[in-house]
Image (cartoon, rainbow, N blue to C red; front, side, top):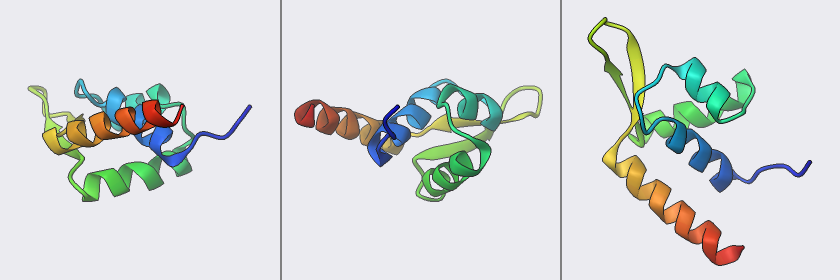
Length: 83
C-alpha cells in the first residue's frame, strides 16, 4: 500500500468534516491513527479550515469552514491535474 500525500490526507479530513462530527468520527472517516490525525487536524484547526462548534446537546463537534471548502476545492482540482 502506497503512502498518502499531504493533499490526499487533508482532502479526507475536510470531506469528513463537511457535516459536523466529533473528532473521533472524523479520524475514523479519514482513516488515520490518533497521532497522525492530531498533527493534521490541529494544523487545520489553527488555520481556520475547520471550526469547533457545539450542537444542540452541548457536545463539541467540528465542521469544515468556508475557507476549508475553498481549500478542499483547490486541492481536488490540483490532484485531478496531476493524476
